[in-house]
Length: 196
Image (cartoon, rainbow, N blue to C red; front, side, top):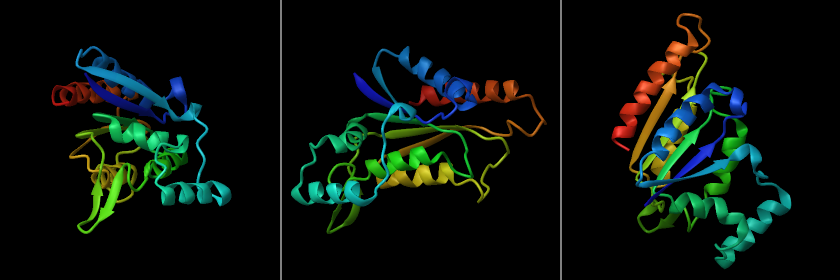
């Protein structure tokens, strides 16, 4: 059975349109017998950004190669997953800061990536990352949208071969009803699930 890690950063929780889209995707995924889905709700975690003693502790542990320390559990969990699904809304042109703090905790030399004679190499087991988001405007390939571009770069950094974006754009433009936009995004989710 393959392990799917679902990272939920839908700040508004059940009031989140991104959560509605993500729940649709994950619910369909749970019906596939070959997958076991583990959910990590970032809003329920006590994540810390790197500062003072917290950073120094990390450096000491890395210098000693103590990768089994509890503070590296996020990195180990991420590195061991067969598939990754991350959900977060567009937030200040990228995503909520909470997701960046989580990513900062994932980046552990020796667990999720490594440095050697050939340069950087990703060490994660996953072969696919799906990033689920909703956006008030229509961004497409706009340079203003940095959330998906950042997540795609991190996918490469972690050694994950396939990056897939599932986005519902234009939710607040008033051109189309948000319900119709989400319906189209769910149809796109169905297509992604066929290749997952």
